[in-house]
Figure 1 (spheres, helix red, strand yellow):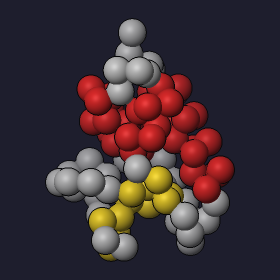
Figure 2 (cartoon, helix red, strand yellow):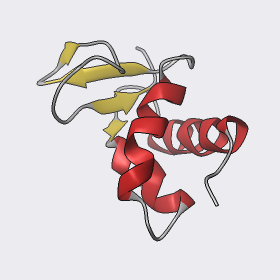
Figure 3 (cartoon, rainbow, N blue to C red):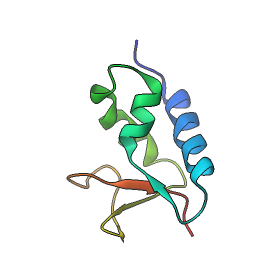
Figure 4 (tube, rainbow, N blue to C red):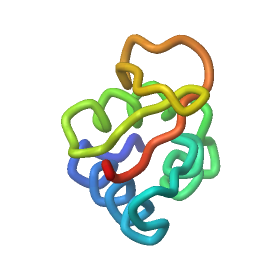
Length: 78
């Protein structure tokens, strides 16, 4: 069963607050916390993250959470 957007958002924000400002995490960490079969959830995690107050980066540069290609990091904005 796929988790709903509310549950995905809770996990994302929990991870962000656990790390704190200036620290980031990979969206796959949220997907892993949601399901043992986490790989199919990564796109959903990125989609939900787009509606949250999180910063997405690649190589330290801010990118769009949904359209960025390749690995991204998420975290609380500074």
